[in-house]
Image (cartoon, rainbow, N blue to C red):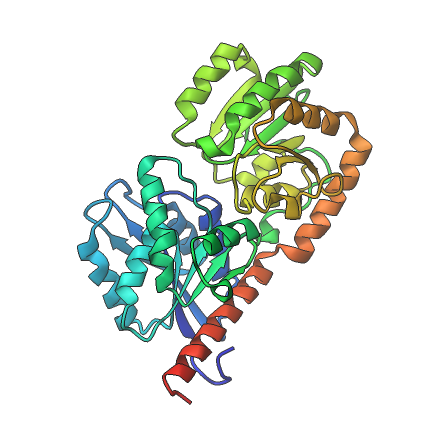
Length: 386
């Protein structure tokens, strides 16, 4: 850590987010739980013309965290790299921590030649569209090489970075952490903001409506579940490019009265408390914040065995796992979880204990700040500083 008596070092977290999903919550929690005797966090966002404001910055400001906007004139505005570079110099930023392919590119170019520790976190590579595949390939193959330390939120992402040619010592894993104060353990299903019938069994998921999240498979599984448990209600929280297609799929399956699209929500703890079961049907993941939140609140979990999900959803212990894109297995696991309340309650207790011990935001921030200190120490020794 920085030496006793030294003033706090400024850390700029740079994001290109247009929303407030799992990665953005991680950024806010890193700043919220920073050791302010050593570090002064600032959350910055690259805002393109599609975005009038950043929900992430608004959330940070409500917590009293300093923020910075870097407004772009287009989706990519390389001329604005100077904005970031000027901020780094004027604020004497010690650590630039980038989150995502766009911040990685802008941040790397802006910090070149400056005495700034460059750290980035890989939250996920989604490859959802051709453009995304191109940008993320640039990130893996070019941008990440400009950082002193690369952090991955899961071992699967670390392995992907290693396959892209990054030195083994240059990629380490720090799992996502949760602000447990926002997610108290519930004792029983509660009333909440969604208009749900208390007689229904509520099966919910929280995720962007993107193809890799596997929502279409959950809808297919829903038709099987409803044949045996017709009082089930399936709730999809989130928005995204798949919403139109998913709504049409619901109509074709004839289950519109059993499915709710709740949209993007800012009251996730209260919404989760209305669920009887949380399902993550993703085709690929890092370590999703939503699943940690469900486990913290005490919602039983069924999930696909992708990414780092099996490190927290341990089959039969803290939840149930199924192969991705397997409708029959997903439906069977949902029915098993709903049909055996005693074993489900046991898994819920084990899940909460795991989150408390290994996945708190405070632990995540502590581990990340140790990386900052290590990189700064290495740079100072390299430059001959005392």
